Image (cartoon, rainbow, N blue to C red; front, side):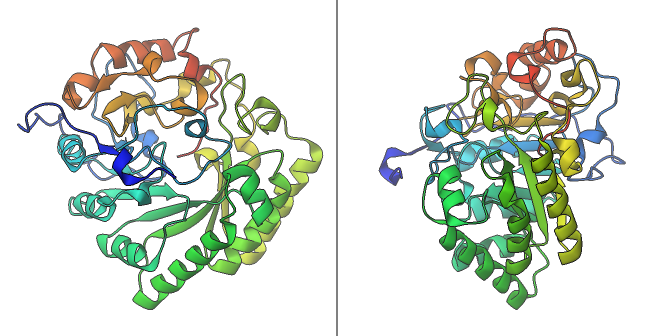
Length: 376
């Protein structure tokens, strides 16, 4: 685990003069976006230039983490220098999209390591934004949990990835399964004691050949601790593989009959126990593991017209999937929020070229193997 003195907070590198906000969305569209299906705000007719500002922001509040997940690239290489997103960079970005509908406060790192996280949530909630993030749950202690509830967090996703300690250590690199389950159970109790409807909780499991048999028990675990939603996340990996993020562990387009039986049993149990069970792209679990019939499925992606993703240092990249599917940020960096306005980035040369390539026969390398339905 990295210690605090090694960490910097990213700096804007320029004066604090306010940037010109992106052109606001029409009043009728503001806040209308369904937070789970925000990409549907984008027209089916898309060109190199986006006609409207983004509906969603992904803000990597930190690139630090206290786990060593065998499915994550940051376990094996440094993507950028360790940093938390500074308050100055955070406000600089969000203030340029004042009517943003949805903000996701995670990236390649553990958000709950960030001291300013509750403050960031409240800053966004004060303007009516839907706010969520994924956490590994290791730091979900009562004090921090209460702060997030009081800040108004809408949704909290716990990436657990296993139904027992052995499976957890295999995927997430540390023997902390029982600790996290206890944290989640205590947080559910805290919500009930405070009479808090939010944040809505969900447990997430990455679809791996090594752990899919645990899926029915994962549903049982969610019901036991009082979490209403379970999400099956599709594995993302480099073509050559790394750790368990490798082609032979992936279930996408390779679901065997026995593995299909685990899915069916999980769906039956979820219905019986009152647990909502879905998968990547808000799809049915089995559908999320099958490529759609289109010849160019990548061309149907609407992310470059609906969202912007910024690393802890302010680097703009296409989406949260790109770091997991292709090494190095240089080949898909679209701008720098510490040096440019969002208006300059959103319809700048990088984004226009990326959008054009995405709709061609030669998509960006990070997108070529991506199916239409993915995690939200």
